[in-house]
Image 1 (cartoon, rainbow, N blue to C red):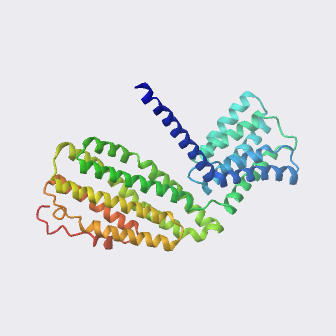
Image 2: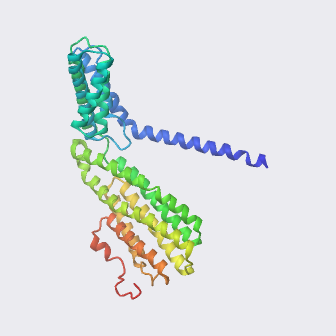
Image 3: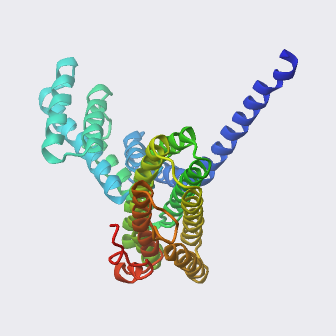
Length: 385
């Protein structure tokens, strides 16, 4: 028996290793442009201060450029780069002025550090701003004084910040790439949640329904990631000359994510309701099958919408959205308890939860709210509601 089961851990380890290697290469591929920006900005600022301005060992130029650009999964934000660059420069300038007046030493370092943090908090509430201002001020006090003059380090910090801003402005990341990748991840996950819910309903399996609910609750960080990357993308599309032509596409993605966020939230409510109903109520076989079919169909639609938002060509994107609307027209036409053969109040409640999801998906494809509502059968003549 032990021989039969011994290969399992090896296969599990190999799968885990392959997954980590794959994720590592993916991170390298998606981060290559930011890595190049960091390298060019830091080395360029150092060389400029050393060769052009004649400063000796202008390490603060390279440091300011590096910490200003940073490295973020959500993409580089102009405000963050500017905030950190100013924080570095102010921290160095403030520390140089203080040390010129009070000298250097342990208690002087404590005074400079404390006053730098308080000044940073007075000027701005940003955490990065405060951290960088305090860190650079501390380095100024603890390191030996420069041979080129009192304000040399402040000038180097300004050069580093300027190089960081120049690089992020002239060579920005594609504002569409990060939102597309994260949006595709979101639609895939929400689609799988609905498929698991459909399977739990079809099998009347409460354990599968609770597993579906656990998975649904993990979707919010993905939504937050898309929202964060969209903020960065909008800044790039507005400010960077190279990518201003992509602003309409970024706005289209932003519009879609508002409705996909609603679909995601409703999917969590639906999963919780499915788990509760399966635990306490027995639905008719016809009702179970019709609900499961509708959930599977909605999962297909979400994948279609995700595919459409992930492509760069506007023609292909429009084609995917038309396909999604055609699919939703069929799904929406069944969204009536009588049509689905549902007699119990609990089953009717599930239908009422799915109807807003259909409308939100229609709006994610580009329809206005009033037009999306026309796809659903009316309920005002249904005397059981």
